[in-house]
Image (cartoon, rainbow, N blue to C red; front, side):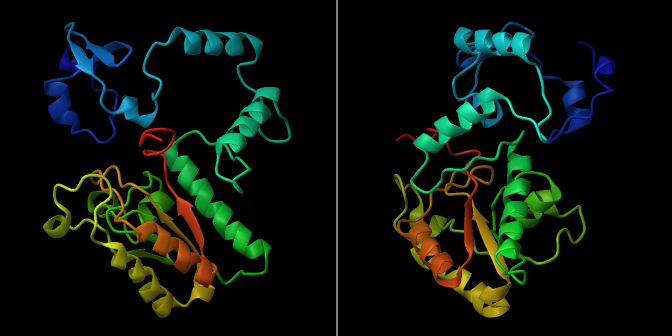
Length: 260
């Protein structure tokens, strides 16, 4: 393909001018590999964009998709249902931890985050806690590219161009401590005390104003940073103490990507 055939598409997270001078084009995929337009195999080390855990081109998946398209390609999700959406929700609730037995489907990670934050705010209001409207994120966090996601996110380049973003959002410190945790295997030893930064924000804003905190259990886009030992457990304790909802964004790290 010539560069002048590529001008109509505005590509996300891509230096468009540089790309179109020297494009990298993928034409097919099978198993763990992409195939480029010049015939090279490229190892897919990111599962597409975290969406192809089961690899590419699996016949069981393509056959199931084809059958469903023939049976029903789309039906309205408002006021109508389809048997398989209930079946999938039931199967997911069976493998989720105890107490997580309701499912809300979305189309992307960004949309899932927006929905989770809206559900958190609506939940607080529904139980008479309408003053709990503040949302907490963390530095270096990634929660998609919609306005709420970049507001609670903590990646500078995703935030700096879009003004003041959502009001009523604050951030706790990140846990990346290379001076103490470099070359750690598994969860690092140092940094659990950083969970106390949530207590600092509670003292600043008061718990009566905080609806939820959203965190990646393992930070993904800013670097693969496992949580320090005891960090998430302490965050859970503080949230329980102050009646704050805890949202785990596992779009990147969930469903087997971290092993058992």
